[in-house]
Image (cartoon, rainbow, N blue to C red):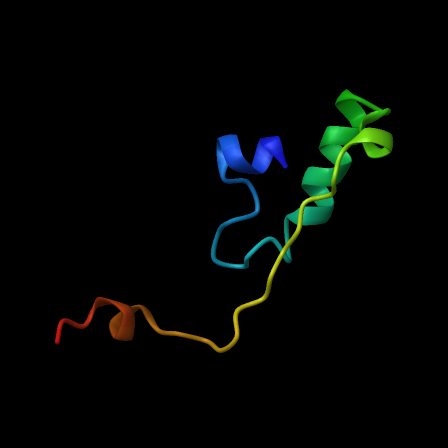
Length: 59
């Protein structure tokens, strides 16, 4: 969780669905005991797809 807060890992376009497993493996390679004491990275899929155009529209 700290890695996610400090680096925003897993908070890109995919919401962590693609990179979460790779990030978890990288953390385990550096510190094998991390799975015993830390929370895994959580990912939350978007409710619905949103285009960049609709986000950038000004009303």
